[in-house]
Image (cartoon, rainbow, N blue to C red; front, side, top):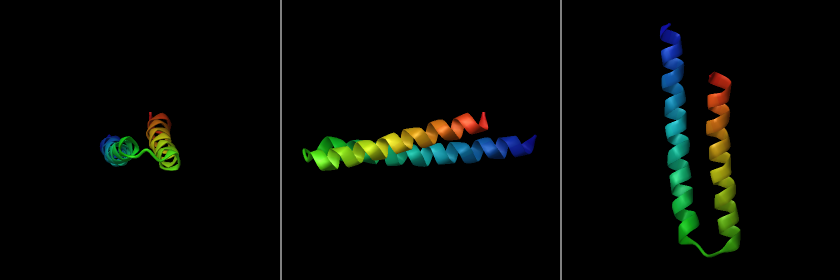
Length: 60
């Protein structure tokens, strides 16, 4: 039973890291007017969202 708690704890750490990256990318997205930079940040944000979703889907 302890193993599942460790798995959940590790997953929460990964989600927290992805959220921090996403927050930084959102701030950078807001602070630029360059369309190329905006596109790059949107793609990075989408990757973070996908990573969070995929991680939760496979575990639970």
